[in-house]
Length: 321
Ligand code: SAM
Ligand code: SF4
Image (tube, rainbow, N blue to C red):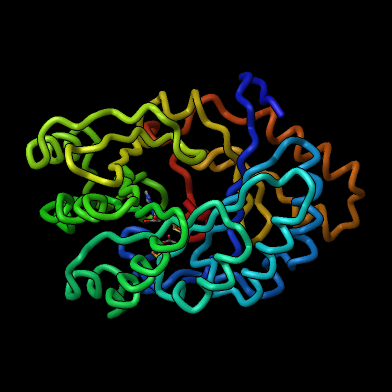
């Protein structure tokens, strides 16, 4: 459906859990966060009921995210059932890749639109320091196997003082493989505001200095705001997600549902509709649909990241990126 700004909102990012097997420093505090209890997260039945209502309002693309979606048992089955819902045209998955290898065969058979795998460093010691887990080899194996059978995008968040020196090495994944390596500007959501922000222009300049002139790709890939380029001789592409720019919002097509049922029209604003509370207090389909419609219609014109008085208050693991 169209929101009040005339944007076509058809893409839902569905967070399966706030839990994660990693502790990426900019996403989750090392000391841990207050995790939701099982009773607090939506059941699969509740999620599917909401998905059915949302597809009725024009949601046709679904991103499965977390926390780490693959730590919630049943995520793969939910993806399969969601893919069968009338109106759903595409399902994609965002994962840190640690558990991906064991699920790849299942995922490949369900006709998924693609997988985003997050990887911020290629150094084992740095990976362990950044994520709290010595799992880089597993992630690299997942990337290798997944990219042989499915469309793969690699998500890299440049963080000042952490991985800035190796961004070009990460981009090298796209030289021999038909993958897209995307640099996502660090958004000052919750805990992340304490980390070093590197803007997209700086990353682009690094890439140009290393790879020379990069051809702008005009074909659209995926559902998001990434702008893609292809350095000479590369099979894959490099993407830039300039999250802090205002243009990002004018073309926004997405809404979010957190694991505890908060329906969020904007990642960068704290407002949400508590669909879990409505579900569990006996709301009818018509009542739920009305609240979903109202929330989409009132999607804010801009994120609030640049407004210090209005920071989004939750860490990214709870919202799902
Ligand atoms: N655990 C999965 C993963 O890491 O891909 C899915 C959830 S994670 C929150 C989704 C994406 O958000 C990851 O690529 C992660 O690097 C990114 N992310 C986390 N915090 C961020 C922040 N403050 N700004 C920009 N991206 C962020
Ligand atoms: Fe977990 Fe993903 Fe956050 Fe890393 S970015 S802590 S893998 S949810």
